Image 1: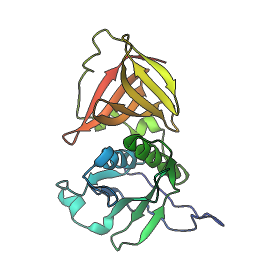
Image 2: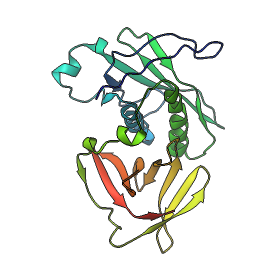
Image 3: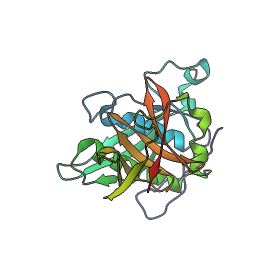
Image 4: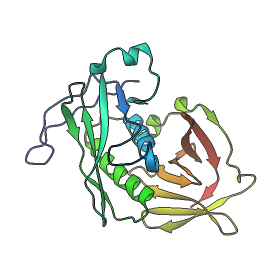
Amino acid sequence: MKKYIILLVVLASNLGFSQTINDYKYAIVPSKFSFLKEKDQYRLNTLTKLLMEKYGFVTFFDTDILTDEVAGDNCKKIFVDVESNGNMFMTKLSVVLKDCKNTILFTSLVGKSREKEYQMGYNQALREAFTSFEKLAKKEKAEENFAPVKFVYSTPTKSNNDTTFFAQPIENGFQIIDTTPKVVMKIYKTSNPSCFIAYKDNNQGVLVNRDNQWFFEYYFNSKVVSEKIEIKF
């Protein structure tokens, strides 16, 4: 369902603009950001795609094969970029939305992280930058933005046979452990208590709560995998 997002006029701030992006249904995310060396390095492009979908856009990578409707007119699409202005002590990222004429429609606030581990630091900073979208969106509940209709298939967690995991608090989130105890996942808080940024094995995605059950969701071969996980907080 198409969401309508209105860019608000913010006086005497760094977000001074009075533009609208009501007509944009589709968003294009690059498969590689210019400040990184590899495609989808640190899963940052995948996370950007997930977050754009959260805010109502039908989102594609620039390497995807598009339908005729999506490919037909670039000016019906919004183009997403992430810019880095950090240093060795702090990761700083901002999200930039442009139209087909390369006109900047919106620049987010700068998301920051002092996390030394690159993947966590980049993803924490990106998630903070996306909080700017909360001020723009006349959006429905976050649970509806992660509607099950988007899921392609579902598989159980490999170690989930009659296993319950336990959440231990860490800075900005929790580490999920088994009874060994061994850390099997790390999750980080978002503005929605039913949704965490999650890292498990080599996969980065989100941990979401639906109907009082937790699911770890991530992309694999361009498809969304949803794994049910029993966690006690």
